[in-house]
Length: 254
Figure 1: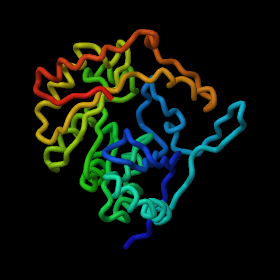
Figure 2 (figure 1 turned 90 degrees about the vertical axis):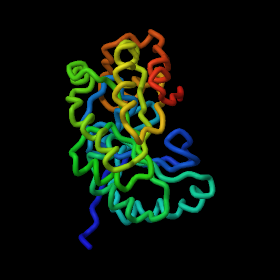
Figure 3 (figure 1 turned 180 degrees about the vertical axis):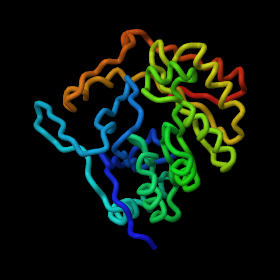
Figure 4 (figure 1 turned 60 degrees about the vertical axis):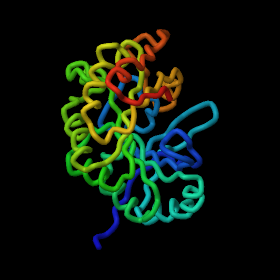
């Protein structure tokens, strides 16, 4: 076996209930290739460890783990998670950005229910490696129009849509998760486009609509960053389930 790799994690959160079925431990990988203007985890954008400064003092965010070390930590929680019909979720940041490390950790967790929470932006090999190892994929879908997607996230959405289509080939169940950003992702046109795309996916479990988190901008000053959302945060999001129900898709508001 080749030498295990190392990865950068910015949080390991225990007893989470919104990151997959049951009670879970969520591992937040550091580093993301997208630059969504509404990102509520700015400390997860940069791959390198960084200092967050606040009136409560400074703290370094981002710790390097060896795969064996993180695998051992998560294995100690396995029986508790299993007894609560849960497991481990790899989120971020973006797990695909550290796919080899995440894959090696998952391989050290036999029998543990695994969720990979991803934007879908990454190489085909990286996506296949993690999706194959996941029991369930949480696949974030934001903006269907490619020009608007680049404007709001800094990247093209072609790799995302390519990887979404691979889930059918892998036979991997997935939940499509849509952040409802006012005037950006929550428009009737965009929600209808998302419904049309996921309706053709045979392994879709459901769609989760995630209302915009107004606390998103609070962490930016601590990270030495400026929060520039580019949209009206005061406008209530358009929580419209009709495009999905018309397409026969199970949908819920998280």
